Length: 363
Ligand SMILES: Cc1cc2nc3c(=O)[nH]c(=O)nc-3n(C[C@H](O)[C@H](O)[C@H](O)COP(=O)(O)OP(=O)(O)OC[C@H]3O[C@@H](n4cnc5c(N)ncnc54)[C@H](O)[C@@H]3O)c2cc1C
Image (cartoon, rainbow, N blue to C red; front, side, top):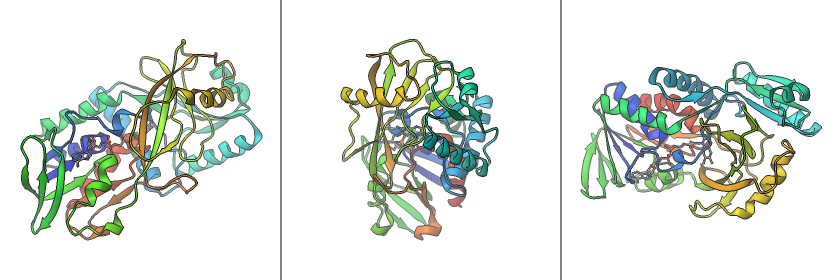
């Protein structure tokens, strides 16, 4: 089949590579001039174990399965990563109860090696840490996400696929047996494809509304959950990822680092009406307070605004978390079309597993 994948983020690239490996003739259309210019370049680069998500949800299934696939991919394709492990820390009794609930959820999700450890054991691992107990997750890690996406692109091209940059997709219509897709950009026009995958991230809803005959009430609303990060100006003090107990809309301001060991904190949750990526330095105040609950030694004036990302959420403040939404032919009735909505965290981790599911739905 001639398959069009819209969006060259981690999800589009993983879908394109999987479709090419399955023998399809794949084109990726991307609005910007390069890969990974959207949500995929503005995240924590954490390979999540799959601790939090309710068992049986797409997030739980694809996070656990995708994580195993991703580690294998990193090894076989030489992508830099480190399985450094993560501690989810409790600083009071109420948090301890919450962390124990996360442990039970993780075990139900089939996450390997998770266990509760006491405050002393946690401090033996990380001397600067203050907590009364923690969940230890040895399967969590970090990845060079750009290296991963370059590897996906390379494999796509090896199989004859290609990415058309600066090629925004406009309207689409199905006229049996083909999809007719309008492109803008330098060489605008209409091209026919057998199958289409909408992996446009924050643009997925807008694109779906331009599909002729697609029911508007089947396009979920888009809620923007901005996440701000602050860099740490001193020498790193932790060698494992440290997470507080989760907050409404996110996992809490956690400690992550890149493969060079540079430490950063974030993301928080800021509900915004429009895309904007400026980090307001005044938000540092709440970061100091939250980080000091588990790292009392955080020095004054050590946090510097770093970057921000925007979660393509389907639910807003105070509402229960939504699942990933994979809208395929069985859902909307249109042949060989898959729309992906709400692919927020753990989308990077889940990408290879999601890709397999999406490609199967194109048959
Ligand atoms: C703050 C934050 C932290 C996160 N941390 C983690 C983490 O640690 N681990 C993890 O597993 N996940 C994490 N995630 C989730 C992960 O980053 C996302 O799930 C993933 O990057 C989504 O990728 P995507 O390909 O769907 O979207 P994108 O990367 O945004 O790609 C979509 C692409 O589509 C293009 N596009 C849009 N409209 C059109 C159009 N009409 N025509 C052509 N192209 C178009 C855009 O230009 C863009 O390049 C995090 C997310 C956020 C926001």
